[in-house]
Length: 259
Ligand SMILES: N[C@@H]1[C@@H](O)[C@H](O)[C@@H](COP(=O)(O)O)O[C@@H]1O
Image (cartoon, rainbow, N blue to C red):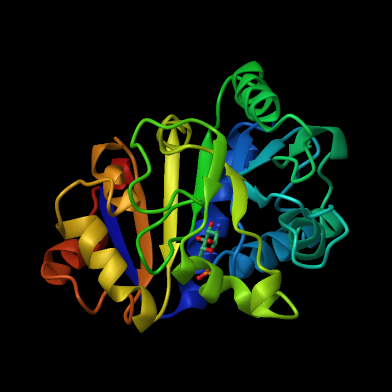
């Protein structure tokens, strides 16, 4: 696990967008795992700028999103389909036939989840997965107690997550109770993972995930088992970590061959 502490969320987003752009130039048909929520918006903004400057081409890439609310149509303003269109897809040149998000309107949810897994396999897996983190340590919509080897499936949101995400809906009651999400096991198969977190509100979840025990009660803690996971955070999200001097030294003194 590599802990990368950046002075601001903007700097962190620039760093991650740069890594995505480098991957796209090295591997134009790269498969990206994308996330929603407020945290990755800055990465998408940077990617749009890189694309406008001719430094990021998505025409051969593919994208798989982590999750979607059950029962929301793609046009619903709080759906993750809508979020992705607004924040990234309509501004860059993805082939729409190569962008995938679990369907919130599937009539047979388990079949839709199995199809999603099959599609990821058909694309030979995810090269780079972007993640945010919930205040309780969830990744995707894998709430605390999610099996660490789970696959794409239906999950029930905790009251805390419904409250946290109520800001995207017109009223708190409107937040669905159920979602479809890639599993923790699905996420762990990505070849490279960047988890982003900003602000004091994420500091406890980051400390528990990075320096606490690996436990299904803090799903992001499983990233300790991932061979290349990078935790990219601002100073506030890093504020409850014990070993920040070490993490900073490691990042600032990387030998050239590791950059
Ligand atoms: N399913 C999403 C997660 O993928 C995201 O990481 C989390 C945090 O969102 P935010 O970045 O807005 O704090 O929200 C939702 O629960």
